[in-house]
Image 1 (cartoon, protein in one colour):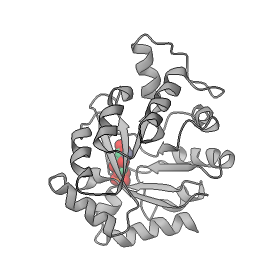
Image 2: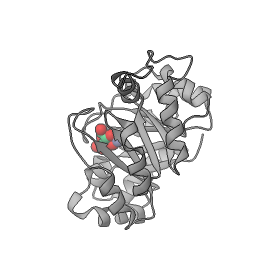
Image 3: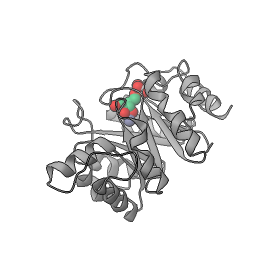
Image 4: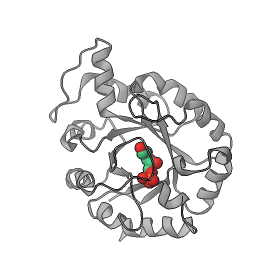
Length: 238
Ligand code: DX5
Ligand code: ZN
């Protein structure tokens, strides 16, 4: 399994003090900073976009792991690349649906081959300096992401363990079980889990094989965020 990577979600931080919050998390042991981008359409919430990533980039050298919960992921690639994002992780469901709306070739998602528009978007992101991530909502079957991993089109898969849209929700163990399916086939691949992760739920997620751990409320809400991050890390590596 690849190294444990702890990524606090800045969605739970004080947005008025974002730069200091990010700096503090890195000092306390964060490996990456997870940046939740929501467009009020793919999910029923609005957060931030590339201008905020660009502003943050001037204050931290940390790996900015951007999670795009947006209906039109192809629309924002160049903006995020210019802003200095390190990971562009978009939703498989959104990429396929947007292609259909644009009148592009858009067959049903399949476990046997990549969807042409999703493949193209992976390639476009790779042509920037950003890593490519593919995210799955809890209801999306994990076999639909396998073709992209098999063909080496993506650097990470994000398995959502809550319905995307809000921090502070309860962990869905059934969704996390999908990580085990991917881990069996791909021992060296980055598998991220996001939603409801905390010291009380990490054992289950880590047993399934996830190695990149996002946590928002559990880290930012803790009296001792460093201790929480080290508990999360310990569960992954043991
Ligand atoms: C939810 C976001 C998560 C969220 C996690 O849509 O993708 O990254 O910030 O927050 P917690 O850890 O509080 O569930
Ligand atoms: Zn997220």
